Image (cartoon, rainbow, N blue to C red; front, side):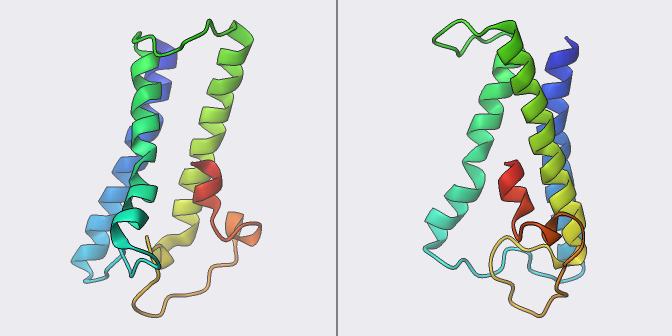
Length: 129
């Protein structure tokens, strides 16, 4: 039960942060979507298909067996650790960008962020995802 709640709260919390901050940006008349550098449908699907993987992980944690092979207990705990680490990077990357966050090429000037995880990777959210 604790595992299921942990696995569920991380993506729900991240999506709440992502879409909640998107609403705050919209109220400030800031377009966080930006301009996609490639075909818009391909660009957006590459961003949002991760939701399918997250949904599968959540469903599996609540008892829907999606595995084709038995998973050893150690592997399961390692996967949970990586799940938590990945979401830690997602949260840290999103929060670290602050008002400079965009889901494409920005349409207006933003501040260059060089602190936090961005110091090591220009796309820390992709590493976490």
